[in-house]
Amino acid sequence: MKYTGQFPKYEFSEIRRLNPYWSSLVCFHKTIKGRNSLHPRLIRKWFGKLIDQDDYVMEDRNEVINYAIMLASGNA
Image 1 (cartoon, rainbow, N blue to C red):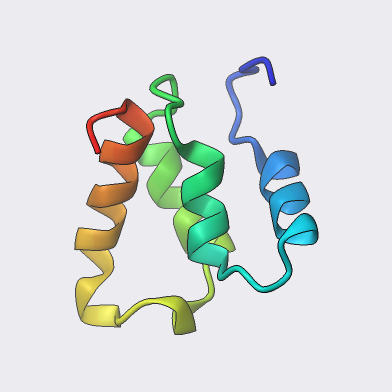
Image 2: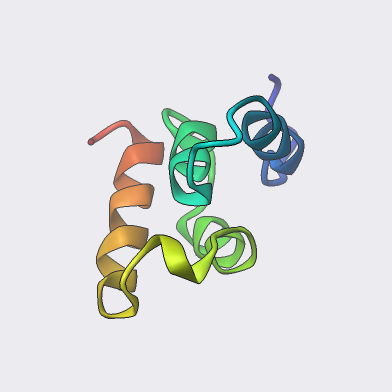
C-alpha cells in the first residue's frame, strides 16, 4: 500500500475484518509495523481513535504508544 500522507485507516479496517478475534491493539500494531513515514503525533492521534480502552491498562498507555512508535520506525 502506497503511503499517501495519511494514516492507513482502510488497511486497519481490513485487518480487523479479516481477523475478528484479534484485539484492536494487535490490528493497530500490524497496520503500522515498518511504516517509518508515520509521524509519532499521527500514531498517537489514531491510537486514541481506533484502540478499544479494554485492550490495555490505562496506566500503561504511554508505554504502549511508545512501543507502537518504535514498531512503526522498525526499532522493535
